[in-house]
Length: 360
Figure (cartoon, rainbow, N blue to C red):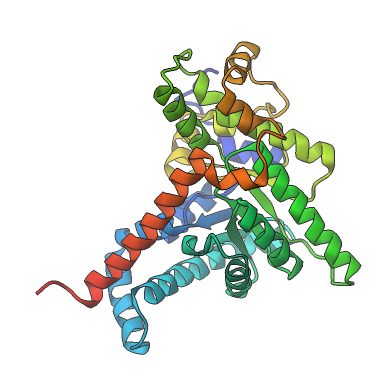
């Protein structure tokens, strides 16, 4: 694909005008989100890594606010104070997205807030926190991990009226299992006579993290691949999942996250899905004028897909039945990403501790 570095085209605006593909911002940082909305973003996300970064980047805001919270709640520990900051960050971001929420009837204009990763083994705790988070703002959508435990929690939380975004999700079998769980929740609501409304459910595939894992896996197994071929792995999974969702009539959308290259946007344009790059990737795509062409139905080049499908680990990620739900949590990308989320939680605790109890 030719890059046009001096083109006046605005790729995200063009995509929004011509296709159902929409842009969300992979950050709840208020300033980044304002700039992203100017490019056409109609949603955003927050997770432990994103929240930690936003709080660190704005010590002038969050140091005094965390001190105020500590004074207001003298018995709260570091974790409670840190997560209150995450809530407030998310509420502020959700407020910026209210116009898009109203304009789309609730399909977009969503702010994703992630459940505490330390709850990843507890269905009831995940459901309870999802319900609590959903009440922070009308346009909140709650992220729950796409593991067997998390998918059970998603179904119950969605039945109770929570808008869902799957996280810790990298593969087609995970996305399909989540899509099926959300269908069951919607059907249960209908059977129970609960009101129908637009939940805006989305099912994330962290395409770049699938690429990362396959690069690590092939290196560990001393497998040489054609340079660049593994950069298509996440794209292949996203295209496949989108096609399956359409074939099965799922009422949720695929979301592309964890960007490593512009293909994770440009190869998905045309589809009824969400692309959620970090703002820096949005800026680069916009500045280079990457064309907004209908490519969602264009297959991954045959020679690349053939090479990818020769890898057993890619087949696990790409085939609808490549993994059972009880295998999702042990997939390499899931283990690595969960550890990163847990580490961010620990770092947020440490940040709050340094504010409350500075070194003598």
